[in-house]
Length: 94
Image (cartoon, rainbow, N blue to C red; front, side, top):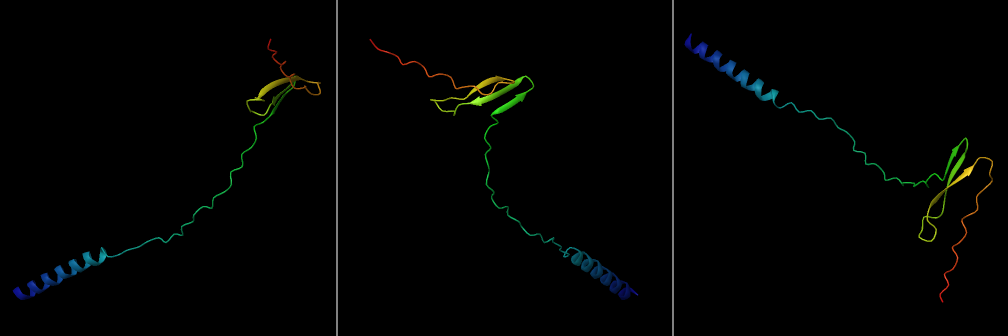
């Protein structure tokens, strides 16, 4: 009887060890395809140059340079266009 109990204990131990060993060996991965985004061109929009209101509109004029900086002009409703400001008079040296 002692040998049968011993054999049964060994079989149970072997069964537990195998179950633990094989349970830890299960390996699963999810295969995903890596997609690298293609670089896209960034389009810079020019600033909005006209803001309309019922009474008139604001227009952004000038080039944004030192010689012709940006400036806003109010144009009342019904007016056709605004001429650019006159040039500064030349400085005369005496």
